[in-house]
Length: 144
Image (tube, rainbow, N blue to C red; front, side, top):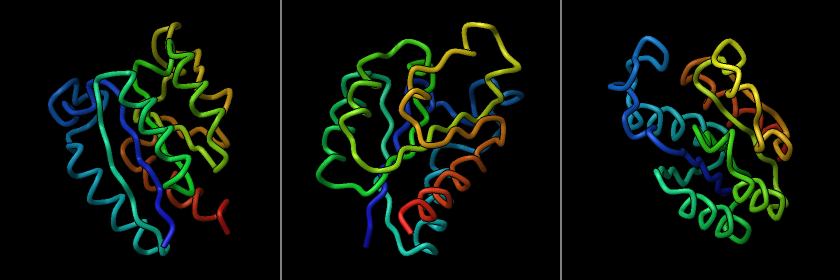
């Protein structure tokens, strides 16, 4: 069974509580449960992780090089600032799908720039937490 890492960046632990008018009312546990269902339906399993620390995300991407067939990543605020995450993703050989719950292109100008997009095989933004499910379906397609 193929393992997909689903990585979540800073403040996503507050999903459902923080700015629900932007991010919705679903919690990160809700997202994990829906991802597990979609992955199982596609014959995959997930490793679902969240950290507020850039280095932890980099370490998990390094780990994924040996343990995962693909990565779904919502880098959150690190999207716009982390060359370290980009460099780690560049060392990963499988497909990478970048997810954003909100439409970052309708928000503040600084959110329009993504370092992660320079590596991502696809970007899903503005679909709410359903974007994670779409990302997993796309990974399944790319892995064939």
